[in-house]
Amino acid sequence: MISASALARTLIVAFFASVLAFAPAKAQQAGFTTVTTTITWSYSDGGDDDGAFIDEDAALLGDEALASDDHDADDTGVATRRYAPSAHLATLGRAKAVYGPFSVIDATTVRMAGDVDGATPRQFAAMLAAHPKLKRLEMIDCPGSLDEDANLILARAIRRQGMETVVPAGGSIRSGAVELWMAGIRRSAAPDAEFGVHSWADEYGREARDYPANDPVHAEYLGLYREMGLDDAKARAFYAMTNATPFDDVTYLTRDDMARYVALN
Image (tube, helix red, strand yellow):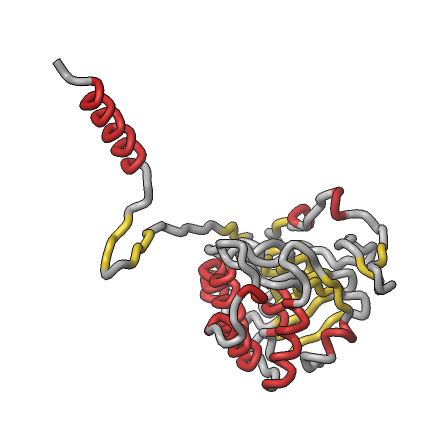
C-alpha cells in the first residue's frame, strides 16, 4: 500500500510535469536561462497600382476615454492634457499595403498608428523589402512601445533607412514613439503636434531614477540619442527631462519644446 506522503509526492511530481509540458522551452547554460519563443507577423497587400486599396482609417485609436478635449493644469499652472484626437488629424488614408502599425500610402510614404511590439522590427524590415523607396514616415497616432528592445532596434532601422519623420497636424506620439521620431534624418512636426514623454521602467517596475547614475542602462539611451544626432549636453538634458516624469504619468510637450533638444527641419 502506498503511504499518504508517497502519494502526495507523486501527485506533486505529476502536477509539475503537466505544467512543464506547456511551458516555453528553456536552455540552462552557465547560470543563464534562455527562453526560446517564435515571433510571427502578418500583413495584407493591396497589390500594385491597380486601384486596389485598403481603408485604414479605422486603425486609429478610438478609445472614448482618450477622446476628451479636457485640458487640466498641474500645481504649477502648466497646462497638461491627455491625448485628444484633433479635428485636423491626418488619417491613415487609403493604404496599398499594411505591415503591423505601418500603412504604405505610395512609393515613398508610410504612415504609422499603433504600438511597437516584438514583431514590429520584422514588419518594418518586410515592408522595406517590398517597398525599398520608402523615405517619409508620417507618425499619426503612436502610443509608444510594448517592447523597449524592439523599439530601440526599430529606431536604428529608421535611421539606417535615412527616413524623414513627420508628426502631421493633429498627430500625437508618446513614450517610445518619440524616440522613433527622433531617429529621422530629417524631423518635422505641425504646430499642434503632441509629444508625450515619461520615464522608462524595466520588467520589475524599476524606473530610471532607481538605477545608479553610472549604471550601463543609462549609457544605452544616451548612446542612442547621440546616434540620432544630439550632442552630449542635449542628450543628457533630454534624458533627464523625460525621466523626471514617472512611468505611469506623462508630460506633454509641443513642437517648440522638442526643438530645445532636437533639430527640426
